[in-house]
Amino acid sequence: MAFDPGTSRRRSASAGAAAVVLMLLVGVFGTARAQTDPLPSWNDGTAKQSIFTFIQTVTDRTSPQFVPPEQRIATFDNDGTLWSEQPIYFQVAFALDRVKVLAPQHPEWKTKQPFKAVLDGDMKRWRPRARRASPSCSWRRTRA
Image 1 (cartoon, rainbow, N blue to C red):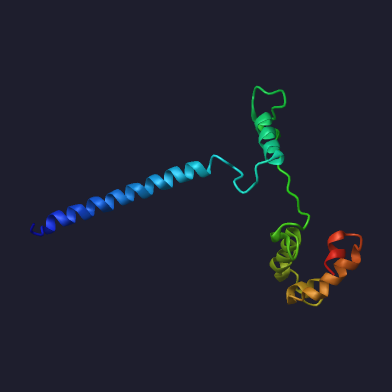
Image 2: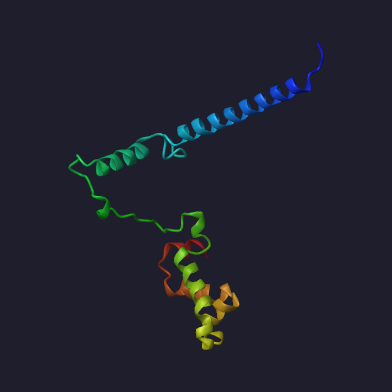
C-alpha cells in the first residue's frame, strides 16, 4: 500500500476533530454532573440534608414557610475560624487600609498613635493595645 499524504492529513484532521468533540462532551457532562450537588465538599448527612430541606422550603412559593426574595438576608460568621480571618479580621484589615487611604488628608496621623503605627506598618505597636482593651475576648486569650 502506497503512502497518500492527503489521506493521512484527512485522518489526522478527523482524529483531531473527534478528540476536540470528546473533550467538549467530557467537559459539558463533567460540569453538569458537578453542578448537581451544590455542596460537593460536604459529607452526606443530616446537616447537609437539613440545609437542602430548609432552602427548598423557604424558596417554594407553595410552602407556608416561603420567604420572598426581597425579605431574604445572608449572615456571615466572623468568629476567627476561617483561614481568611487570620491573622486579623476583615473589618480590621478594612480599617487599616482606610487609614492608609485617608492619611494624605490627615498629615497629623504621621506622628499620632495609633495612626503612626498603622502607617509605619508597626503591627506590634497597636496589637497589644487591642488585647488589653478587651481581655475577655476568647480569640485574644488563645492567641497570646
